[in-house]
Every structure is written in C-alpha cells, then in structure tokens.
Length: 484
Image: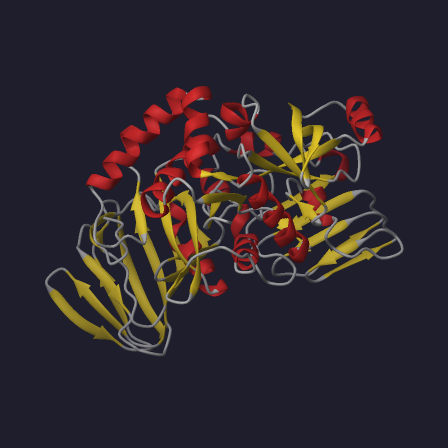
C-alpha cells in the first residue's frame, strides 16, 4: 500500500551565478522565465500533479524550507499555484542536510514515520511533467519495497558536462538501480568516459524516501546533524504558535547545525540508496549559458529576450528587462541588461560570474542584494535616484496594506502622493494626504504609511535626506508581517 507523500521544496540561495538578474534579496527561484512564471511557481505547479499528497481545504499540500527573508515572496508563489502549505523558515542557509532533517521531524510529527518525503530544489526546470509524475511513482514503489530504499533521481546525461555530479548505477532494482557510487564534478575527459559507458547519470539533487528510514540512516551516518537539528525542532515545537503556517527556526541553535549537503551527509555513505533514471527535460539553470539555451536561436545562433537587435553577430544572447539593447559585430557573448546593472560575458566564461560578484562584495553590497525595484509584503519600492546624502523612491502600497510603524536615525523623508490617498501616522498625529498633496516626516519620528483603499493602489514619491540613506536605517515598532 502506497503511503502518504509530502513534497519538500528547498528554496533559497544567494543568487550569485545569475547576477544581475538574480540577487541575494531575490535569488534564482524567484526569477521569471520567458513565459512569466518563476521557477518556484513552476515547482509548485508540478507538485499539484502528483498522487498520494494530502489536501488541506481542497488544495494539495507541500512543505517549504526557505530563508525567513523569502517567506512572503514564497507564499505569493504558493498561492498563485493554488497549493496549501507550511513554511519552515531558516535564519541563514546551512545547506541541505539540516533543512531536510528538520522537514523530516515536521512530517514525522504530523504524518508518522511511514510517510514519504519528496525533496525538490525550487530552482530547477523540468519540462516533461508527465514523466516527472511517473518517475515519482516509481520512487514510491522503491520506498515500499523490503527493505525500503533512499531513492535519488538520475537525469540522463545529454553531454559530458563538468558542472554536475554523477551517479554510477549498479544492479537493476524494479524501475531503477542500486547506486554503485556518487562522483563529484569531473574533468572533461572523465565526463566523456562516463557518458560513453551509459552507466552514469547526472545527480539532480532530487530524492524520495520514507521519513523513518531517513532519520534512522541519518543517525548512523550523520549523528551530529541529527543531534543539532533535533534541538532546533524541539525548541520549534515548544515555541510553536497557533499560526502553524510558518515556523521560524531559532537562530543560535540553527547556526550550530553542520553546514553540509545531504549528498555528503547521507547519500554517499548509505548502502540503501537507489537511483531512478529519468528523462524529464531537466535543467538546474546553473549559469547564464544554461539559461540562454532555453531561448530559441535564429540561424546565426542568436537569441533575444526582451527588446533588442543583433547585426552581423553570431552565437550571442541578449536579455533585457526594460530597454532596447543593440549589438553589432559581436560573437559568443551574453549581454544581460537590468534597470541598474549591465553585464557582458563571453559564453566560455559562464561558470565564472563569481569572479565579478566577489569583487563587488567589497563596496557594492546594494547592487548584489537588491534590484532597483524591490518587492515587499505590502507592495514594492523602486529607487529612482541614489546619492550619498539623498535617495528618491517610488513607493507602491497594495490596497489595505501598510508599512511598519518605524523611525529612522539618520534621515528625514518627504512624501508626495501621486495616486490614491495615504493615511499617515506621524508621531502623535493621524491624518490623510490626498493626491497632489505632500507631508514631511522628521528624522527620528515614529511614522507609518497606510493605504486605506480597498481597490486602489497607493503610489507616492519619497525623497530621503540625511547623513545616511541605507536600507538598514530602520527601527520597527509594529508590523503586520511579523518583522519587528
């Protein structure tokens, strides 16, 4: 009898490999692909096709492990896909072994040790959803065999790629194979040998196993991970509130967890591991080169996403967010243009983006972390101009939403309403500011911006002025999104 299946989505990352489109504040799972859907939304939509998943209020259920800073963006993608779910929120990334272990404790507490968990990275693209469903069903049958197995999903290699780990197959078992060995990213010659042997598959980072067996194997092969994550979970349970939609992990205990992947901690050590070969149209979109290959190329090998023009050029890719980009007489380039950063890279250097981002870390933190337009749970803000002693923003507040009650130590603010009507708390005053009117928020004043309308978006222009205008000059006193 097939057990209950709980999908576990791992969502996060620092966003460096696809900079400047991906940033720390909006990493790869939240990148919109060419059809307008994010990778995370696509992951959730795939989950809705699976069998054996419980439903909450008629919606398929999933568990998401992500950074606390990404909760509101992740919840938005979950809602768009029509799923229900619970979010386990990390204070910082500690790799996949701690994340999966804490998810296993949650599933064990709510569905028992016989339930299965399906581990899905949020930043992978799978184009063959029907085959994905069949492969998961095959993995579930391996879970129910005697003995049950820890099952990995091996992607059929299309080329001798040196950017992936590889899985070597052993003896056949149902629709899969026992795993003979896991191998790290090889050199080109070794990858060619792997491909020629037809016994090797790319390690996708997707796994399926029963919760009880997973925890038992972890106790044997990764006892320190189990010890530290058990302490995290115990405190989560003790401090759990009535709102179980999100559970924040305690920072000090979580930092004590080993920073280790599930591959190193368990899959490469256990002798109870199998692999399901799968041809899913899979890509981890791990570089600008792999992303560019998703776009249809013309007879010269050129492709363009957004507005652009390539003349007397070959094998070149343009990705433009907001303006027209033209190139003449170029070859083998990738040109990525966003509202605040232009990045030009040769295709042969697609794995070397970190050489740029590491240099930027020294004095350009904002451009690594945030886009010019930044999403917030209440709406968005767009930086129109940024200087040493002033900053100009366009702020859009969704209907019936409000910013936190806050103050700033180093800056004052001028607000001009250009659409809608603002309700403003300014020290002890509560008043309205209509379209074409303005108000002044002194430095140090407790203040709050509220959109009282049920259907009109509030838009204001904010001018900050002071000795420091960084985004971290904020002290919150009240917040409807739990950010105090």
